Amino acid sequence: MSKARQLADLGNVYDDGALSNRNMVVNGGMTVSQRGNSTGVTGIGYYGPDRFQTVLNSAGTWSVSQSSTAPDGFGSSFKFDCTTADTPSGANDYLILYHTLEGQDLQRLKKGTSSAEKSTLSFWIRSNKTGTYQVNMQDQDNSRLTGKTYTIDAANTWERKVITFDGDTTGAYTNDANASLNLEWWLAAGSTFTSGAVPTSWEALTQADRAAGLNVNLADSTSNELYITGVQLEIGDTSTPFEHRSYGDELARCQRYYAETGFNVEDYATAGGEYYHDPVYFPMSMRTAPSVTIVNGNVTNINSTNAYDTDLTSLRVEIQSTSSGRAVNLGGTVKLDAEL
Image (cartoon, rainbow, N blue to C red; front, side):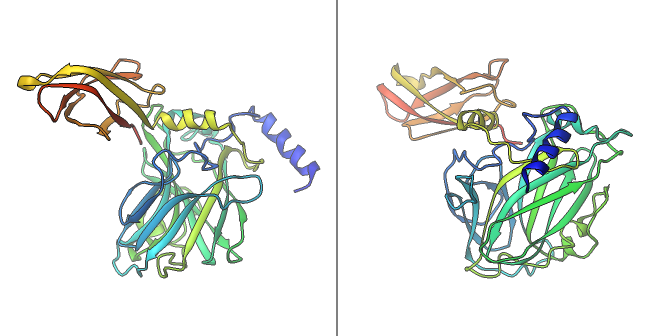
């Protein structure tokens, strides 16, 4: 892209009122990976880089990780590596990469109005598996869908894809902290999802259309792998250079949804089943009251129901030692999950 074109694109963005905070995607550069890498993945979950969810049913076994393989200007990517191959034989088999956004962060798109805005999705992608793939925007509030196809043209080569979606004059995104929009990259699919037509215009959600343009199966060989990074969703029909954020900024955004923090109890009695109420402070205010998991500690009988501060920055966890008598320097790690 020429400098003149870059300046023109930035001018268009300025006219739309956004030079910073253009990117609605959290952790699009895959810099934050709080959970670490995972192997033997066969089901739905958050693995590898934060805010990107593996959605998987009977489509092989995978290693999911944060990789240092990345295009120039990036340090990390999200990597799928097939470890057990499978040809989706069931109609409902699938492998999808999700990124889910809150409705209150999407109001700028003016969805459901006569002034609904276009949006442009861009990303860098690389795979040994060339062919035609499909990426969708799925409106969860109103059960609506639009999608486009793109091709991976050259094996093992980073390629940047830019896809513009029309605005939708039907169905507004709910203005709250709940899930409203899924970005979904289809990588393998059974016939339930491939027997229709690519939804190039917004439509009522039709399962048969969600992967109608997909002509590859990333799960068909243990040689298959796929990397993605530089994911950006911005208002309008213009793709601008990726909005790099500092690691600290991106981490804080991710910790709204998932965080890990430690606790330590120096001394408390456990005889007769006595509990100690330990305050646990979140790194930042979370999206909603998180589920709580405590690991790496000699602790049992966790109970945090109705114990959250109103600003969702701390909770009181009831803990009890697995040993009898008094416990000294009893600690662990608290995992806080408020994912969409």
